[in-house]
Image (cartoon, rainbow, N blue to C red):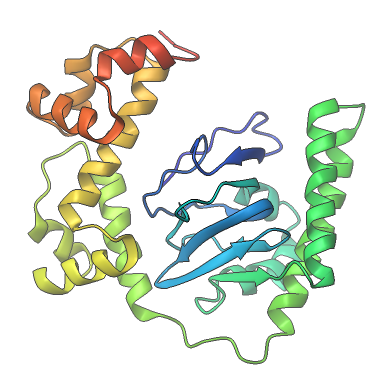
Length: 287
C-alpha cells in the first residue's frame, strides 16, 4: 500500500503532474491505496493494470481507480507519457455523512466498480480534467478560503463518478480473486518487517501455495516473494530519504536480516547502492 503524504492533513488531496519514466509518485509495482485515485493523460500513452485487467490510456483519457484495488502504471516501449495524478483521502470523502452514505459509499464499496476509463473524446473526461486542473490551481495559490472551493470542486467530481456508476447497466461480475489478492497484499504491507514465507502469504488468502503464486503473477506480474522484496525496497527508499537511520538499521527495519543481501537487491533494482542513493537523493531528512 502506497503511503500518501498530504500537504494538509485537514484537506487530504494530493495532486501532481509527472512523467511515467520519473516515477515520482508511482512505482511499476502493483499496489493499492485506501484513497481514491484519478489519472489524467496529458500526452502520450501509458499501460494501466487494475486488478487483472490491462488497458491502454491515451492522451485526453481520464481513469478513475477505486480504493483498495490493485493497480499499476507501466510505460509502453518507445512512449513517453505525461499525466496528472489526483489522490483523495477517505476522511474528506466521508466528511458529510449523509451524502457519503447515500451516494459515495455504495459505489466505493461495490467490488464491481474497480475502475472507469473515460475516453478523451467523451465529455465527462473533459469536465473531470478541468475540475482537477482547477483543484491544482487552488492548492498552488492557496487564496483565502480556497479549501471551501476545493471541496465544491470535489463534489462536482464525485457527481461525475456517481453518474458513471449509476449509468452503467453492465458492470462486470465482482472479481472474487481480487479480494483474495488484496488480503494477501495487505498481509505483506502489515508484516513486511518480519520474516514471511510463501506459506504465510498463502495462508493470509486461504489458498494453496500454487494458487497464491498464480494470483500474484496475474495481479502483480511477480512471484509472492519477489513482490515482498520489491515492497521492502520501496519502503527502504522512503527511509533513506526521510531518516538518519544507518543502512544496516534500514535493512533490518524492512525485513532484510542480511545487509549485504539488501544492498545487492537494492543495486539490482535501482542501479545504485543504498548509500549512494541517500547521498544523491535524500530529501526532508528527519531526526
